[in-house]
Image 1 (tube, helix red, strand yellow):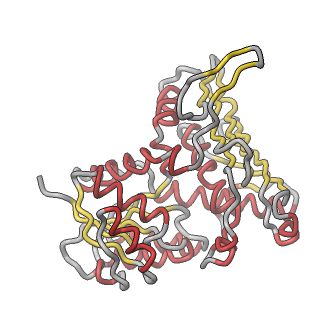
Image 2: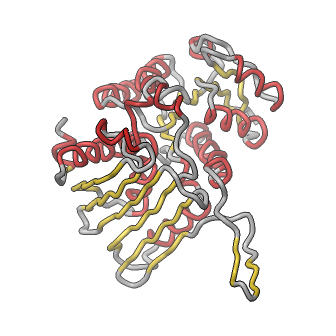
Length: 344
């Protein structure tokens, strides 16, 4: 079997997850390159994990005619530019979220990808989680009837480190664009084709209290209204004392489906002091690790068999529009319509 040859741009945390997955768990692909402008830390990790050492110039990947596709794991503010360069080089693209911070950069990247006839898949890996995928299938099969409410709780165990706010594009993203965006995509995923029409967001800086005046909220609540009449209620926080809290409920006219936290075991100790159970798995590298592998399998399948990608450009564009609508709603204390966002 001919393997699909891949390159990765960006050797940070997510780039390393993909690199190790491809090398160990994606036999239909071959990882030829990883590119990183500052490769020392990545190379030390790569030697210990059997992954290729990094080249410093990502254009090495684009100029190799044997490379079929590129995974973009670079800082988000560079995504749009890199999508365009990859597309013009004839490489299919898997891009981590968000597709870009700039709406104009997103539009231009999508136009270029379409003109160059390449596959463009977005990295919303939570869709491929075994729990979420099963729940969505039940909703799509009508097992809970008409969707009325979607409730999503997504809380990180620890806030981002200080270097996040100093990173290229880091402070330009913030909570809505960099973390809640996964939940906006999940709400659309669970809505099974209904689209968001209205957005309302509120939030506070309760962890880094001096950030609130600059919009740096870390504890938020968001309401999305869909054209079907359904609503999604999303609560996020960047600090959760008991671990990575990831729960979903989809409530419908004939029932509901619930996704609970994954735990290391289902063992519950019961004694005279009460009942004790495991805490949730600690963070995304534990909770969602298998989903990173599965989304790459699907990406390769779309390339090899010329199928639509499972998470497309529209999904990437709409999730950014919702996130930016949340920023406006928070600042202006009002409901923001998707019609006004699509007009931007």
